[in-house]
Image 1: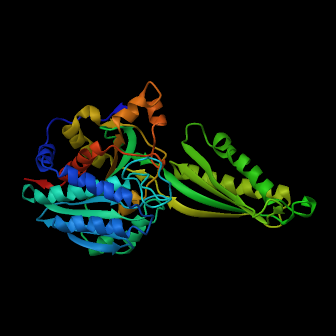
Image 2 (image 1 turned 135 degrees about the vertical axis):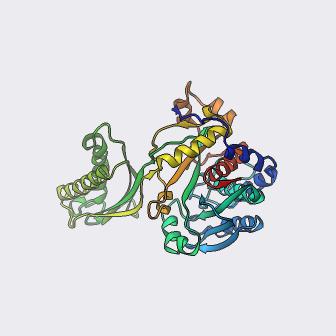
Length: 421
């Protein structure tokens, strides 16, 4: 972890941010967050969450539309001549059973805000209200977007297809942020490549089913799938250069209905993480080759089916845009709080909002409570980072002390581009 470029000193945007956020209604925002956390909703079903955000935007004076791209929300605050800045938060939760033990834990069995999107919505609502209350100090247009379905990679595309940039002002810059593990109070920025591409791959192995007592009359797809899973582990270790970041995960394997029935097919679900299209294509070619070879070796009656599913593009910050936001964050929080952690293997669909190469900056806000961080095993940042609950963990529980700084990061980021009086 290295420090990002230091801010040159106090800036008008930083000073104004402190003024506009001096009287944030923090208890009310914390209550808003707790309410969202209690009521998580899965991708494309975020109706309550969208309604809550829309109500906040309307109350702040934004012209607000709901149902954009399905369950998306768009709020527009026109405030004279000047740049148009889009602030985005994602709305959806995950199919995770919560294990935090929090008094405001999810009330919906098997669904949890395990990725911090409830915090993102809270930050956006707070930033929208602060910017609206201080509109006499800046000029331009703020577009606040509550995006559905980030977790399955469909939401940004759906909003764009539903006329995001035809029905509402087209932005000059896009700004987004994400809650992340790490002791609360850091603001990682990465100019250029910040998040990897992700591709889901589904494989169906076709066998010949039969009775478990007569395996000689069958072609067992479970055994073939087991060989396939093992062999797929060599794609990264033996076919990708050591300096090329890549991950292949077998996330699910399904086959059979009873102990004594050899099924007729087995299904395998993969997820790939890559940082270049060349590596992605090489991995896909290897997967197809290995699947075909293992099925031929087993005598399967049909070729395997290899199907590509959801795909997230790499998230690549515009260097100048990200450095400008990092500088104002350094001025607000102190230059040592803004760090460059390098590209991560996580993925996002935020970049799909950048239609026509709209420049964007996407950064992180670390949210691990200080006491959790202190108790985590390890002697340095990297060791503790691996030990604390991360995004998608059933124990992921951001510190509510990050409500105010998460609002300030969005406010200051917007003011870095708006015309400041």
